[in-house]
Image (cartoon, rainbow, N blue to C red; front, top):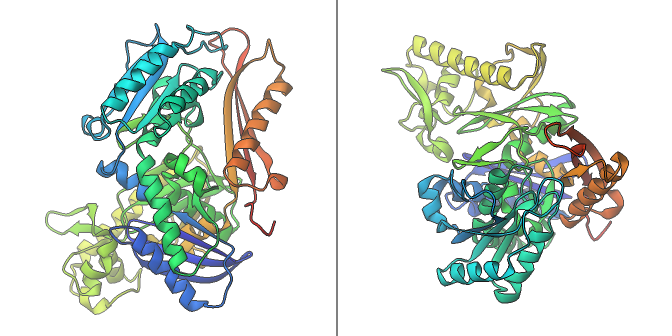
Length: 513
């Protein structure tokens, strides 16, 4: 039996899955330290089913996202770019918000190295320059370094050798390599590696904290963390790549929505307590963003679901005069501050209860609300959700829409642009279900010159890399298979260059496999 846990801004949900059957569910308010909420939700499941044997626990957490947004607990980090004499016009961290740069130390260095798109060296690797830079950064108290070589996804040897040099001299320094974190695009890939590097301390404490808490509850099963592509990774992999957990919550909801509804291709609207996330399902998985995305104000290009997020949830605060809805939310304090629960803050949940669309708390406490206020707010909620759905769609055709999340009580059973609106049973814990049913995935992206290697050889090489990454993340090698191959001819460069991206998934590698 598996336990799936997902931490949202308002509630922490947990489910117990017996194979493909939902055996139990729990929902508790998210706590300020996050971990306590996880313990509370899992404790409630254990209370419901005290005798069950747990084979694995899967957790989707907001720890790492919160650390970036709040600029706290980030490790002092430097960026070392292998590039000289090229790329000096735009140095590392050039596009970062000033406060985030200060929060991580903001030290940057450049050294000789890097490659052209076809693997030719820009210059030989400057080993002495690298050693000088690392000694300087360590002297300034740096504990993590992101290494980024120009076109390292084509040929990662310079990055790998730099990591070996650093580890030989300073084995306690955390090293993150850009070719393992991001895609093509120097600044975006470099940024992704830097974000991953600065989250190292948070990742170590978070993984250890959750594991220790589960042990105290008598659960000795393996712990896995949700990735933002709808798959899982084991704790060792999560400690190395915490940045891959960002946006895992909406992804879990989409995977859970597909499982609950049976819809493999459609739109998922996940309404939480603070925000609404809308995304497209393709073959049961979230459609990935094809463009660079911003995290905590930083432009990155690592894999992330193609989502539209709006400040609308069950805890969104509504001001009657002048009328205003959000973006502020009472968040996990909904059951304390909303009017239907005896509080003094008017929220969208109160208006949904007054409208008759929802039945939570004490409806008598909102009977005196102005009918025009209720009508205006409910119409605006519907309009904002429909606009978000329209932004995610790739055509004007109507498509199935699945409503999930505890805040989905705000929406009606009809949405413009939807061929049908499904509200599956247990939709309120779809996020935790998505975590519990997830497989383990790996993805590889490289540029190949098809003049030197054939198309089949390029795909085979990239596929082997994706499979290897899935196994490293915790997949059973016997179950891993390639599920997606994407080829993009790069018409703006010579040598018949093609970008190949491969994705592989497999089942969890457990001791019983």
